[in-house]
Image (cartoon, rainbow, N blue to C red):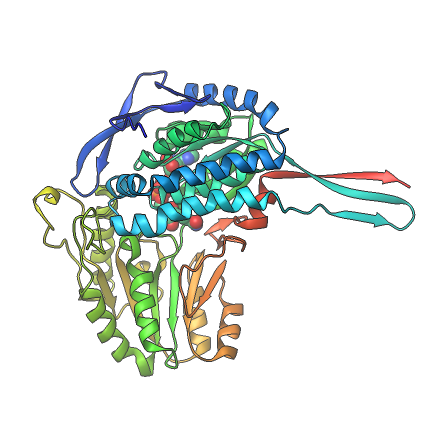
Amino acid sequence: MRIESSQMRNFINGEFVEPINGRYLDNLEPATGKPYSQAADSDAHDVDLAVTAAEKAFVDWSKKPATERSRFLLRIADLIERDLEKFSRAESIDTGKPISLARSLDIPRAVANFRFFATAILHTESEAHITDNVAFNYTLRQPRGIAGLISPWNLPLYLLSWKIAPAIATGNTAIAKPSELTPMTAYMLCEIAREAGLPNGVLNVVHGTGPKVGAAITAHPKITTISFTGGTVTGRKVAEACAPLFKKVSLELGGKNPNIIFADADFDAAITGSVRSSFANQGQICLCGSRVFVERSAYKNFVERFIERTAQLCLGDPLDEKTEQGAIVNKPQLDKIKFYVDLAQKEGGKIALGGSAPQLPNDRCREGYFFQPTVITDLPVSCRTNREEIFGPVVTITPFDNEEEVIGYANDTDYGLASSVWTQNLNRAHRVAEKIHTGTVWVNCWLLRDLRVPFGGMKQSGVGREGGEEALRFFTEPKNVCIAR
Ligand code: NAD
């Protein structure tokens, strides 16, 4: 596969094209802090070009039988899988995540997303309602037109493909904007789309910043559907831009997820699961459990063993196979993490592990953005560190005395994305799951994802749901046809 990775151009109407203004943004490698490529610094004019291409492509694409659309998506999945190593390496360089994580999670999940929606569209059902002997009604679900798909930097291909696959599978055409911090795998996906023979204009990718390209997508009157994943502050701006145009919007936003350990939990599983949910991808997964609550009788033992296990995590060059903790995505994110670790101490917290920059893994990484996995105890539940999203390798651990108290703690945040509960008591698991205000509750597990289930957040973690049937519905317009009998 040809990868012109030094200068990533936009992908519009099946061609790689220069941004109209000719400008490029430097793309840094987080592990080294140095630019290693450039991506188009596009603006509204490039979005206009993409809209023209997407509008034209929609005419044929939306009429193609589902079986044909399905074949294109399956081909894309096969080609990404063929290039698993290239994609994993690119994702690791671009994001700073350990290559082993990119290989085991991100890229296989992108493959699964394309396969899932390629086959889901072959098995959809249509509803019919019979109004006594007066009328027949049936629901036509039609593609909505051009979908604007905006994604963040933490799981770039995984999250973008989770939007692209259902959007185009259901007959829409798409304009995707990857994060300007991690554009590489989206760029590579365009090469794959071309190789798969995806008709021109069905998938367009416009690179650039949020205020220029993202805002142009949300403001464009011909882009009627917006699927956005990112921070809550940005999500608010997206909602504000879309509201006057009555766009259909899905917002997947930030989280401050509770991870609750009852004393009757399988302790080994709870420790292993909690270390993973706290520090996977350096804590930069929206679903990471950043607030750990432990029943008081088990608290001391849990903290000791959690710290022991966390201290063993291998921090290193993301490209090293042994690395379990890679780099933070950029300097502003690293500064944000440091800010919250300082704040936690001012709020009365005790740094039980980490809390600073580590010894740098090797000479190549001497200017990279690294931070030690950090454990903070003794913080009040309602302080800022425990309520605001940090999005880094920082967790707080707090004891609790009973079920009611911990449910109150878990819900004491504006976010409501996901939670984990560790207990052997089945009745308690059901009771607690029902009372926690999060879109997903994992019991005795974390990040187990069945692609058919609804996915999304409550409260300020989002609006709408993605996943299986929800995604197929989101990207289609239900039309009732009523026929008098
Ligand atoms: P971000 O909000 O800064 O950026 C997300 C995307 O929005 C980027 O592509 C960015 O360029 C674009 N953007 C920025 N300003 C825009 C504007 N005015 N209009 C339109 N688009 C704009 O988020 P981030 O820092 O890239 O990602 C981290 C955040 O994403 C965290 O808060 C994390 O919790 C969240 N996230 C949520 C989920 C989820 O499924 N709920 C998944 C992953 C990440």
